[in-house]
Length: 437
Image 1: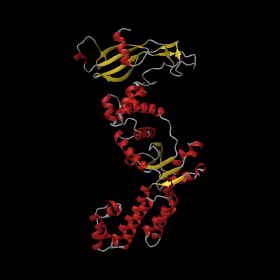
Image 2: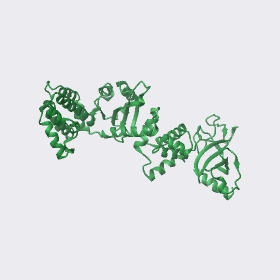
Image 3: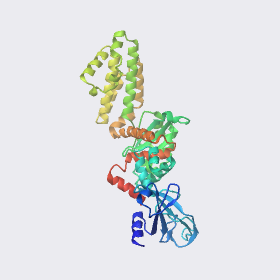
Image 4: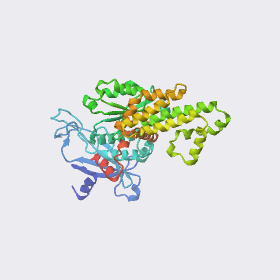
């Protein structure tokens, strides 16, 4: 090769090929290379590639000297250069492989089979799609929406194959309401299973029934189930029933998310507040009007003025005072450092709300009593349940940016990519782009 061809081959980045270049207009008209640079603006740079080395079978990767069929030239979109869109033109061959006894199309060094974009372009598109809507990425690269999603899928799949699968021991289970996105769907909810140690999603299924979680549990091997230690979930009973129904998970502890425990306590407190103020006189009703947020906020987060305003409401009714103090007692119980301390404080809470004449507190008593074992498991295992709610935030961010997704497997891969975030720094981006080699 001459010096010019050698430089082009080095820029191309793949050994064993000879490169020739030319320019075309958007309508496909060939432009004279000797034209002034200004006349080439907006033209596409066409790299015509000729193979110099023996072709390789795409099935087994072995070198094949025999050619079965010579195919017509094909084109692949590549990264732009110098303001020019770049395409690679190459006429592949169908090889006759003696090792795997096939006549597959030869291995393409710069692209995956049946793809019309190079791997390095797909990796860059995936980086862009992490922080831009699909429509913006499509417009920036002059591609269709479906092409952008297909490129991103391929890039993330390559990244997933390089990751070592972590051993799952602490599992988070939560449901997600689809809202307006549930239109036309049978299930209005989906169930998300996550790894609490890394925060990444593991599985997504339709619905929030016992059968939904059992479907994922049935896909686990006996070794995977023996490695599980704790399931963290909200107080939705079907999830716990699915775990208890599996005999191979009899050693696994079930722990409830403190966020949902306090949420249920707050609902009972709010019900007491509404019940009392509905029957109260005009004086107490005037004082308690618009104070709902004071009852639900933690006492340590209130200012002195807010404490005084809350005290004015509480001193007017003993039921309100009981409900608020029970909420604060429950918050302290969930912060207990050991199981014995938590059990003592939880027993005290249950004793205070055991009276049958206070209906909201009685319902709360029955609920906490039924879930007592799962609440006490918090003190022993302390699973990082905040990552479950963080995953919900990533879900909303992803769906808003992508304008919605119909493929749950695609959402799972994108969520995993967002959670692990392998492109958070310069080294991470460099390693991710290197997957195209």
